[in-house]
Image (cartoon, rainbow, N blue to C red; front, side, top):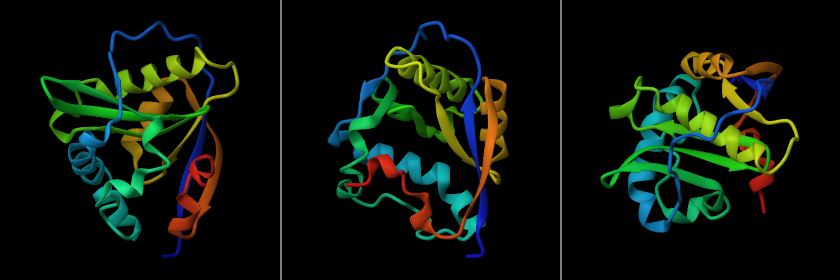
Length: 165
């Protein structure tokens, strides 16, 4: 892999009203649905960027350090989407492909901003691959600005340091 560009983005928007979403913490029983949707959301990007494995999650043990930070949006037992809040960083915002382009991505993003803002006034950040222009546009429309450009040269660079043991 030659590398690819990731934008570090910082929230510069104002206060977010409490969203009308009810998210639940990730539970081990949610893993099969979560892994299926997570892998579907990132598979094409990972293929295009040459990041292997294309499907990240195969078993729950891979999520040990992350799962306490993940929140799920469900309806009638179906996983609609998810977002992780790790300190002041928003990560792994995903929407079930069957529910994309219906406003859930923006709603999950605003939920995460509100959650972090209730805990701290520190800067909120996230990272988005330049390749994923739909995500970049979503973040820009919701008060984020590109604060840095990083070149990722290997999958080890992609690990969130806050989740490392």
